[in-house]
Length: 486
Image: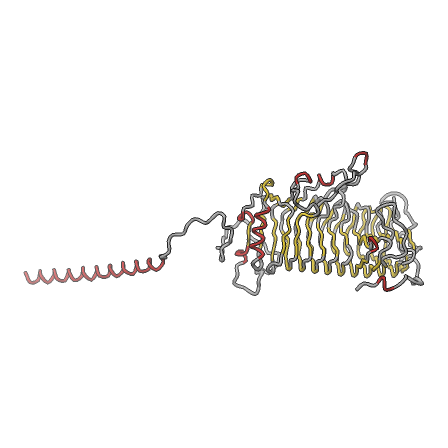
C-alpha cells in the first residue's frame, strides 16, 4: 500500500510539472509578441500647433464631412498611380488656421494651404461649406504640380468696399492665378464680390451729384483673373456682385468654363461676366450670366472660342471688342456662339471697333440664338467711341466672314434690330444672313435695318428685310498687309 501511494504521488507531481511547463511556454510567447510591437523610442509628444506640414501619408477618415469630389469622372485623378488614395492630397484651409467667420482675415491660411497643395500632384485646396472666408488681394502663383484643384464649397469674399481695402493692396484685382497649368477651380460654394460700395463711388457713371461723375481715382478690382496659364477648368461655382469684371482670362491657352452662375445687378457698372483677351482655345458652356455690362466680352488676340448653351440677361449682350483702340492692331478669329439665349439686354450680338485700328475679325459664327426683348440684336459698329471727341480716321479693323444663322425672337423697338455700320474705307465683307426672324416685343415692326459699306449675302428672306446689304466684294479695302493677322 505504501508503495502504491508513493507511485501515485510521483505521477501527480509529474503531471503538474508538465502543465506548469506549458503555462510558462505560453506566457513566454505572449510576452515575446507584445515586445515585438513596443518601440524603443520615447513616447510621442503632442503635435506642434505651429507646424502646418501635412504628414507624408495621411490616414483615411471615412467620416470626413468634406470629402473631395473629383470633377474628373475617373475616381482616381492620377491614373499613373492606381494605388493612391486621393483623399491623402486634400488640404483643408481650416487645418491651416482659416477661421471662416467672415470677419477674420484668412489670407495667410489660404497661402499656406496653396503652398502645400502646389507641391503635390493632384493636390486639393478645400474651402469647406458652412464657412465664410475673407481674403485680401492675393496672387496665387505657380508653377505647381499637375492637377491642382481649388475647391470652394463655402463662401470666399474680399474686404467690404474701398474703405476696407488694405492700402498696400492692388485696387485693380482681387484673386489672381498666375503661371499655372492643369488647374481646376470648382465647388458648390459662392465667390461673393461685395461690389456695392465700389459701384456707388462718385466717379462711376451717374453716381455723382446731379447725375454727373466726379474726377479722381476710380480703380475697382476685377474679381477673378487668370494670367499666363494653360489647361484651366472653371466649373459649378456661383460668382456674384463683383466690383468690376467678374472673371478675366489674359494670356492663357486651353480654358474650359462650364456650369457657372454669374450675377450682379442690372445697373452695376463695368461688371462684365467673362472677359477673354490674348487667349486661345476657349470653351464656355452651360452658364447663366446676368450683370450690368457685357455678358461675355472677347478682346484682341483671341482665337478658337466656342460659346455654347449660355443664357445672358439682363446684360449688354455678347461683344467682340472693343478692338483697335489707340490705333492698335487687333486680331480675333474662329469664334462660335451657338444655342444661346439673350434676354432683356441693351445689345445682342455685337462687334465693336475703334477707328484708326488695324488687324481683322474673321471666321465668326452666330447660330441658333434666341432673342427676348433685346435692343440692337445684331450689330457691327466700326465707329465705337467713348466720348464726343473721336475723329474720323481712314484705317480700321477689317471685319470679314461673319455669319448669322437661325437668329430669332423679339426686339425693343427703340432701335432697329439690325445695324451694320462699317468703315468708309475698310468695308465689312462676306457677311451672311440666314433664317433671321426678329419681331417687335411691342409696337410696330421696324423695317429699316441700317447698313453702311457692308457686303454679303442673304441666303433666306429675313424679318425685317435687310435690303441695304450689298452683294459681291468692294473694289478695295486698303492695303491688305495692314489687316493680316499671324
